[in-house]
Image: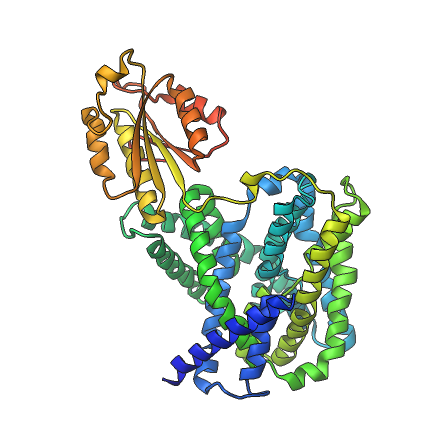
Length: 538
């Protein structure tokens, strides 16, 4: 009963404090941390040992959500659109900042190098919880959109977190496992990364099979449960096989995004909803767990280390990454300040060394705590106030800022087996995501009214298709016209998110959607097109 009452107290205190701090113009997470300090042993001591006993499991679940969100949120098109600048921004700043942090800890604190690097990888990570809302707000108002600056900051934060968390996991494995010589440790880096990518790819294929081929799940929440369970399995599997489990989970999310975009989109929404609760638990518990005495002892030195990392690491890394680009100096400076906030990743992983009983675990947690308390509010303030002052205001593209909540799927059908398979896959996705299904049949008949007197009683195969989707919100449209042109125009008018097409075998006699039609649709629309052949393969 103590655990239940503790959880209730944590949720209430964390939520109320976060709302109060937001009204004061401060990030919500600082309010959650303050609530944790109030509830923890430093002040109120209102929580029982039971809640601290599950703190590591809560951090693990929060980390799993962060990793999945990172993988599901990697926008390959945005990264490729910005070319080498986006790649450099994703790698150089985080590497340079981690190096500066490690060197500063070595000089100022005299730690062993592995602990210095562990601290560096923890503190250098950016905070999606702070940065994403700020960049989306700037995008909605048009600041920097013509130059793609908010998107660059978003992609930098996401990919750089992948680098930081991966290297943190590898460094932690060295410390926890007592790895031998530095030479062998360095050789382990490419092995861990390569094996993490392979395991992540395999996990994604297994996940896709479970979600799409077995009829194991029927709702988005059930998809999420299976995904989290498989993610937990990937985390546990690293105890038996040498791979980067953090990179594997992010890879699993990214591969799923590339192969099942509709499912991935809904999973991203579900993990975002779950994060609302996990975030409160995570930040309240870090406030309750951290030793204020340790923070006070290391506070000034810790702050100096964080500042050195930001000034000589983060800022110089951003400036170096954008040297050959056409950005103005003030825009480059904004990119450095826009991605400086630290909170989410630090709260999730900074307590792991302490929970493992590693030396300096408490000191590492204290410096990460200082980084959160300083960079989250300062980064939020600078981003909100510098953005409108240093960025040019451009024209807002609503389609790239907001997305309607309900998915709209168009599936074009005829009497072929491929069309039936396309409808089955689209229906399965619609059931799990709550999407609205638009079933479209294009006919070239001269007398449409004679051939189809009522859409409620259409041709035989349309009646069968209606029965297949009776439990799904849908409509059936019979339209006269040219197949490819009509499909594209209908999808555009609806504002469809995806188009499903049956790719009929050229040997089939009864077909409307042949390969040429599918290619024509793909070439004339920006809406993602998903092809399904007669064997029910994508």
